[in-house]
Length: 273
Length: 273
Image (cartoon, rainbow over all chains, first blue to last red; front, top):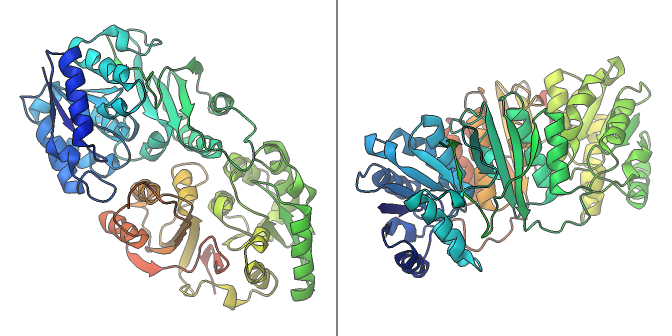
């Protein structure tokens, strides 16, 4: 199995790529990981210009020699190329899994909307930088290589449809051409490094956009690394989520085992078997 | 002239209110400033519960004894009550000016959409806390009390329609029931305390929502207190704005003299004179 790795947002390093290849060579010798050189281009905030990032994902996705595309990390930038990338995809792109999270939600959304391949929310090579991150990286490889059900978020029921997003990424997706129809889906959201007032505000925005979308419900992943504000917000993240769900009549279904951390589980978009 | 002051978002202090009253007593003796007690309620992040903040703005706006409503400060919270507030407004609310900026863009938007009163983007009592903030506070009073044209943003031409927003506030407004029709308007935006990647992302979102709105153009106010990221973004705020405007075919008209600072000028929504 050949896995093509590119960086639609921000750059990776060759050292960390070597660590991921070494890890995978031991744990998943049947997988060949190909880090495209584009992963290492630095151009200001981004892993190359929009044109370079677009060219890489389109080339890898359209290459029949790859079975899956793994996004190397998030950061910001995928929204700038996602619509055009999907427009340029051809037949070989349709039979691949696309795996990532955070800012890569832009591509997962656009691919899902276009019905191209199998978008999957889950750990990326960059998670090797976390303490204990090997397990997160292996979890995604277990899914890509073996379709291992142990990688899955534990609330996923077969026959039911799911999507998962970083909440702020989703807030910037709703109402744009990248946004898929979520009718009948359970929406899982997680957040990182946002003040609770910004989390609350994003919930207002997402809720207003999705209140009539026919969601089956919402699950809340972890809300981590919340910066300390000049005063306490007055509610927990879960209380915020429950209040907005009640206001918008979206069933709140409980927790989701996703987040910007090593425990982040795999959530394939749509329904599984 | 009686000016009612309330806090749809976050609380003020009695000390700072006293300073504003003293200032106005000297500079605008014909104005009576009434800080509603709701300005001083503290409830976690907010100036009281949603119900308390809603009750105050509705009561002041519907009171024929007030000629104008001045929002005391921004912070976050107005989006939670704006739709319901506008729903509860009655005839006396229609002949008032409503003045504020930042998070109060939510109320300015909702009032403008409903065609109630005259929403105006400009300095608030809280600006007295800035070094040299007296001038900003007086600028709004000059507008409220005398309709002084010197308070106006200098690019405003009579007969042309304008709105002004904090970009992140606008990003959370687009596509919601609070959002007015901006056909034929010049849109002025400013930003504060956001990373340039978040500024870029908000421009993506706002641009996707407004690309077919028939804007007459966009002017960029100041983008201030940008946090330092782990690496430079690679473009200035103006380059970012110009690029997105080009992509979405929105005429970029240059700078706007607005921002989270003491030079922030007054932008009445709609057309003047």
